[in-house]
Image 1 (spheres, rainbow, N blue to C red):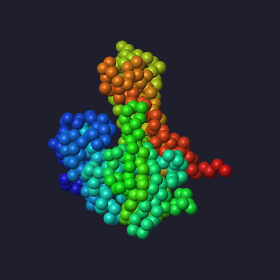
Image 2: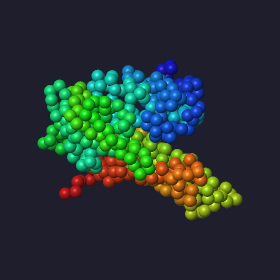
Image 3: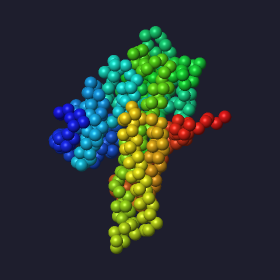
Image 4: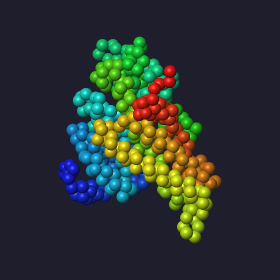
Length: 399
């Protein structure tokens, strides 16, 4: 691939289109969200070939630096790739927590040895990460975490428990918050990288009512972690964690938010299918037509605001506290859409299984149920409101 820099985007678009058409397996068209939900089960031959091609090209994280295997493209070039993939039903197979949270944080806070070791496998999509933050006694009040890392000279000895560790049963590494000073709360936390294959690491999947197990309990019992796995300064983990959570909220309001906002097709088309249309081609139910129109306006306004915020974050060296606003707004718009979709489907939006329901109808129910958690994970809506009031509006803490 030629280095177009900020030059001829038309030439770059033509080359990108040719490469995508040659490398994207047609069998994967439109299956991105479904396959990425399957964790390790997504490793079919076509999926693996597509992931390897995008990883070798560095286009999974196109704007990351070239020295770590990424493409080092401009934001405009990255947008061209997204547009050309959308045209042929292609999707980015390089994702997960390594991309959305850990990678950009390590690029900012890690030393060169850590970047050289951990960034290339993330770029290629060959290594999965999980997040060791929440604990049974430290959820919204994350700084109350108790998992302890004792200094043993050339290594830390880690003991404790994490919970809601998404994808821990598939992950090879965990970025983890640990307590390295018991005399201080926020200032006694460090950011540690733990190999999930190390002795003493135990993962127990949590089975949900749906039968799936996307979350896990993770136990650390006398786990020896080399000192070189400490990111940033000792007891400096809280600052790094706050930055990582900004990246997470940016991704939740953006990538996942887009799927929640537009997955399943336009609501007006769906409503005409299930409810019917009048002689003018409008949704026959006037009150429903008004609410669908209002929602689609809100969704479009949100996505435009999200695009503007993303552009501003790139020019201002990364995401800011404004991600809390976008996280709350995106969660609401996504939940509103899910509620409307089930209402439109009527009795066909009440199924969990059975041949009388289409795959799209069954998926809509799961999206609706799963979407209820969006105001909790990644920092609850209440936590985001606190951040907005203090970091953006400058309001005083309650005395």
